[in-house]
Length: 256
Image (cartoon, rainbow, N blue to C red; front, side, top):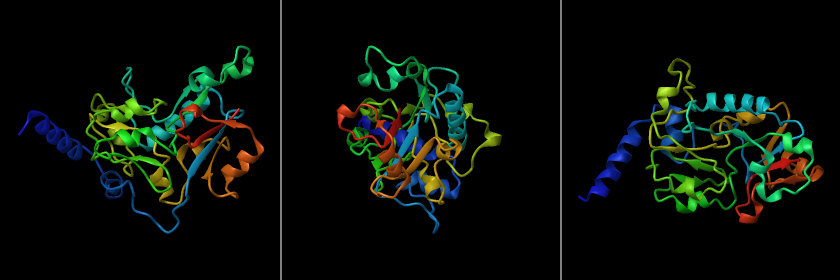
């Protein structure tokens, strides 16, 4: 057996064995990210999010949401540049570099913007994944199957939004193991991870963590339903998306 083939199988086996799962979380991580679904689960043809940056625009506000998201998903806090992030904050120029002008309003320049996976309509990360660990669900959420991830990081190179993190080290060394959320799996070294629009909560009939914690600043719903909350907001307010010129059709909109 060639060395590369042996290394692939060894890495894949370690990845599969390294997850710490509850039964429900095991279904989430090992199959098609379809956890046990109850009758109240939320459905959509195209999930989308609208963030009102007039209400949500400070580092402290966004950190509060990120802390709640990261706690729910057992995301470690690693005090180096190898930190894992599902939700984070950035400036306008970092968030929308192609949509700046020479005379921006000072108030806008001072705002912080919450960033996360955009769950694109045409996600380049899905096209480049050799093992289908990254895949797009029927509702257009871009999900991860951690058992399939071999850590090649092609998805990270393909994502134009920097929305993915790689576990260079064992993330469980940086988790409070006495305060884990047993409804979501921990991961291991060598796995890529990202925001999943809280598919596990949608399956339970609940909205994503950041939406419920945002106090009305984030709206979530079906983009194809003209009566959904996101369509209502999009009708009323001017919004922009990140890097629209790339044609990935992000599912996250920002009210400016």
